[in-house]
Length: 112
Image (cartoon, rainbow, N blue to C red; front, side, top):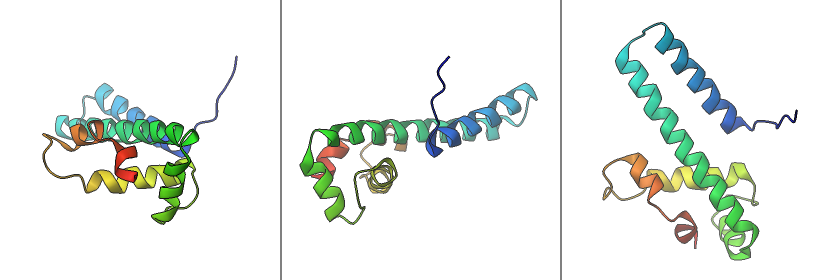
């Protein structure tokens, strides 16, 4: 059996999902559960997009250079995630939700 280390983002998402599961089992406050579920979806989307951009940068030196030029530092998950998060917050309001904005944005293009 192989165990892979969880990074801090995976751990945060897993902890949040565990909290949701506990509330569901305890038949907790529906509004709180709904809010936490949305938060988990947003974190999942941000993390997935950060991993996609991180992988794209492995083959695109211009992405790595632009991240550094923008002041985020070297091409590591924490810095790529920081860019994704900050860029997502500033996406124009043409999407129906923050989640759809995250999922529908080409962050590599934004970086370039």
